[in-house]
Image (cartoon, rainbow, N blue to C red):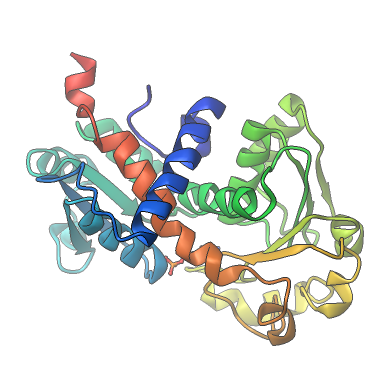
Length: 312
Ligand code: CP
Ligand code: NVA
């Protein structure tokens, strides 16, 4: 078993199923007020080199609810901000904590952290991927529809970290994924190429948003300018005209379509208020499920043996 979660590909379909079932169980226990402390005495270090609301709070609250402790570490208040290497940071933190969650820019930085850490490392978002988000989103679809295989999931907008992880999820779990991105803003080429080569389901990349959402069970979108791309915001707004998830677009999907957004949203850009606050939207359930799914991920990776013990 892989002790890190850097990409959805680190999990087998069977492991994903275990995590989803565990998340369901943990959510029910939490709603019933049942205490469960399998991570008592354990600490998760959370390194944030980019801002966060949901990821930070859901991991911190999740560790607390599992009986453990979470440490928030940002770049400027640690020696990372003064040039200490990721490798040395990973080696030092591994002497103190039982797991590391990292949100940063390059995926290589996340991978370097995992290479030098002797405890599990979890990717809390990189420029390339956002695996915890998409695992939670798949849980939300499963919770609402009882299945994810055989569904048509549409993604409309920027071919960013969230889109890349949706492709990984579709390839791992075998649901149909139709992505509509403006020319020049497609998902990462090697991720698309692998998906097209290996997929057992339909993974389709087009430019027409209507075609992507036609008959869809789920519509997803995300911001047009991700963290770190603020300087391109105005130019992107122009390029993304025709890719807004609004009432006209939603009408092309099934009557019972679920509209999803990982949040934070730029209301009035990639999604209208009407849709985000409308009957199809599940965005706040989606945000809540980050907590339950990440608790399942934490127990899966940190629950039994530490990575270095498992390797002995
Ligand atoms: N969806 C998500 O990861 O949100 P944050 O940036 O607030 O963590
Ligand atoms: N694509 C967005 C996701 C935020 C959760 C970003 O990287 O800013």
